[in-house]
Image 1 (cartoon, helix red, strand yellow):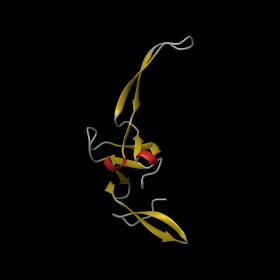
Image 2 (cartoon, rainbow, N blue to C red):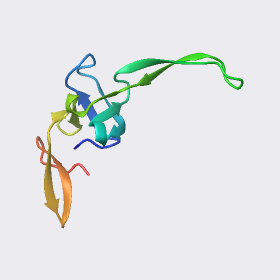
Image 3 (spheres, rainbow, N blue to C red):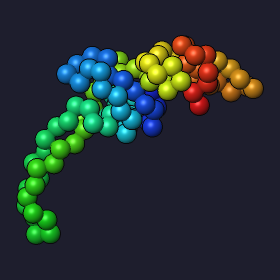
Image 4 (tube, one colour):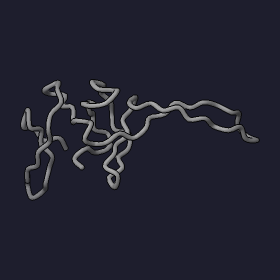
Length: 101
């Protein structure tokens, strides 16, 4: 999976198509990511002795193939390539050619 935590991504498929957000969490075994403000789900929390009952709205996971890395320099979604620089493998933006991390 080429998307990492804290990357800015654009949703390219699904009900939230076109939205951008930051990756909060990745789930590599299931090839899914959780993006801020995307795929909002409603969770009902039962009342306990210490807290009242409430309805929580939280982000659900979406498939990593439905998001694309957002390049801030190009101001557009871009694919990610790899390059070896100083003996280390780094991610590279295909649109601008600049290293991501």
